[in-house]
Image (cartoon, rainbow, N blue to C red; front, side, top):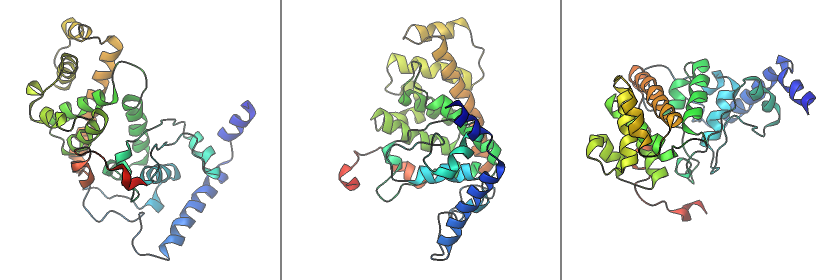
Length: 276
């Protein structure tokens, strides 16, 4: 087993190049039959920076985008993707995040690609670093924060930073995970008046203190501990607030626009009959 892992890690670069050529060949073949491809730049404005053609992107980033756009209900990104010539290439990247996207992100028509993937692909190395850290923060299975908690932190801090993309996209994800179609809207207007429980309120108070760069004191930690959080949870809350402070500013820089699909997502019960 160890020998197989080592051989994958150190397989000659020529195989990686061949994998990229095969992928580009598939895209080129498809281009012969239609003028409008998923590899074309999006017709709508999503960024003030150029969005690369997929044929110009590294293989691992193209594979990630294609995985997000599939109809599969649980989309696994990067880890053990069952495409023969690509598996060793993904291993070489030393990236191992796994993402479980909500079913609402993949409609019966084939789903859509969130614009953040398109915009950040302008710089592939930073794209990889961004999503690796994103997945560590937002999709970890340990700690006291739920997925809905994490999304609510993003909504509250992103509205403070006036980030349209993150507010719209992560409000949608909060609606999906929490099954509460109106709470994120209340938080957007004023989280202090939103219908929050004591636990959620303490969590957002701490997140906003980090977001505003307040001086963090023992009283902040005590307020969290009184509602059941520990010091590791405090780190998670702070790390999410800090990471999205960066993300918010990148969205401002690029004039990143939310996908229209995000606006209505999770507001009404999903019609599962459409998936049959």
